[in-house]
Amino acid sequence: ASVALGIALALSCNAMAKDKDALQFPERAFSVETKTVESANGKHQIRYRAYRHIPYVAHPVSKEFQSLDVMVPVEVDGKPIDARHAPIVLNITVGGYLSASNTNPARRGPGPESLPPPGGAAMAGGESVPPPGAGPQGAGPAQAPRGGLPQQMGGNGSKADLALAAGYVVVTPGARGRDNKAEDGTYFGKAPAAIVDLKAAVRYVRHNTGRLPGNTEWIISAGCSAGGGLSALLGSSGDSPLYDKYLAQIGAAKASDRVFASACYSPITDLEHADLSYEWAFGPQAARTGKVDSALTAELSAANEAYQDSLGLQGRQDFGAVSGARLGSYLQQAYLQPAASRYLSALAATERDAYLQKNPWIHWDGQQARFAFADFASHLVRGKGQPAFDDFTLRAPETGLFGNRTNNARHFTEFSLRHATARGDAQLDAELRQLVDMMNPMYFIARKDAAQAKHWWLRTGSRDDGISPSVIVNLGTRLENHGKDVDTAFFWDGGHCADDDPQGMIDWIGRITG
Ligand code: DHB
Image 1 (cartoon, helix red, strand yellow):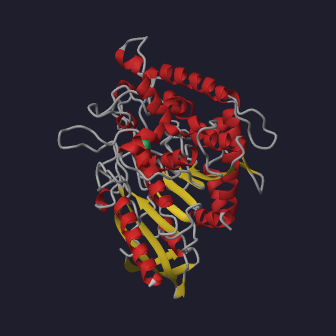
Image 2 (cartoon, rainbow, N blue to C red):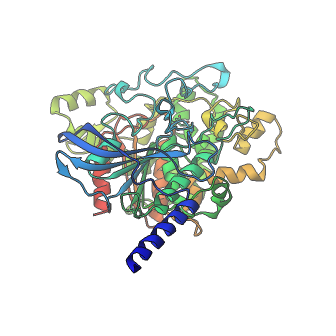
Image 3 (cartoon, protein in one colour):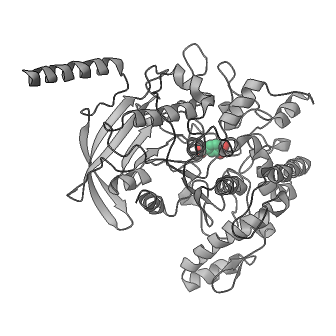
């Protein structure tokens, strides 16, 4: 009788808990699927449980965007996998700061139509910048296969598939974005909606510890471009109280939104300083060729040097301060020359000779590539308007990110606001200023009231024309200066979201959770 009573009690407690907990992971609601995944060491047959379209907040604004998919490997090449304690990859598919949908896969990340081409913003003098790949990119291998859009983790042979093949759990959340518009014409996905949604997804996963397979202390966020920026923000702003009211509004689970590690490919981030660093990196060459206003380039570049000084970063080994005046030489010594050296070492001698012939500014001593940063910079080709992010005509994606319910786009820097309004004393309102902070990982890294991921994997291409190469290096360096384990590298001649080593991230996850 006492056994029966115990069972009855357990059942009714369960029922009560279920009633109260709209955010319980539906453990039995999966289908079993199979796929073939091609990795560097051949093809793998994977059987996995697929849980799809699971709402991750109690009061969704939109179930289309605020739901997630969970993939749990059960068998790889006929061998059973126990993923109950596996790392959990949070696969961020946001691109262009647009919405990402889990219900409608066609709306996951930017399609070719939905993201304005780089350079879509008006150029000084009404001239437009050639689309990526249209002009000569300097000598070197063609960039075409890399494409100009983020390589999401969701496609065939993607890192999400490689993660499954490695026995990891993959959680893919949708998120609201700057394009979301309600029937009454109001916008519902402007900043900070995307990061609030991703935090809610992390909370949902942790809230379901023991129900959702995987080790919820091993959540690793990963994304590229806008998704890389959001991954960096998840990794740097864990449990910050700034987001609490937004998370409460949508009925997010009451759990920590810290992540264990963060992988960021070509992160489009540090947005309020991105115009400065963009002119510093891409301006001089474009100004020489008359493509942009050279006075504006000079003004923004000078402001970048002051900004860089204000960061007070210390370089690796004995480099010392990464000041504005020494930023180029730090990039060159610590990241660009090593990337070129890795690239050239891997080439056959005849290919290497041909490459060096076409790029006489690179000196090869048989093991290492050497060049001046100025020579590297003069071979960069600008891909965006001027200013690149907070453009004066409010057409760049980031001005749309900082819109609000009733305005599609707003200026988010005082520089562009003043320029566009011709009012030298114009100021951003306090609320917008806080939203700008809430979208910037650099803001959180030094703060005690936000948790940072322990481990970081930062990757980009040396020819990424979407953002200055200093942005990812500053992010990594600030993290290093605060004691984090950071692995930063450039893929030589790679473009935006380049990834020459997808298995590298998978192996890194294995090491940090090993
Ligand atoms: C993305 C690309 C951009 O050039 C940009 O400004 C913002 C986002 C992207 O591909 O996600």
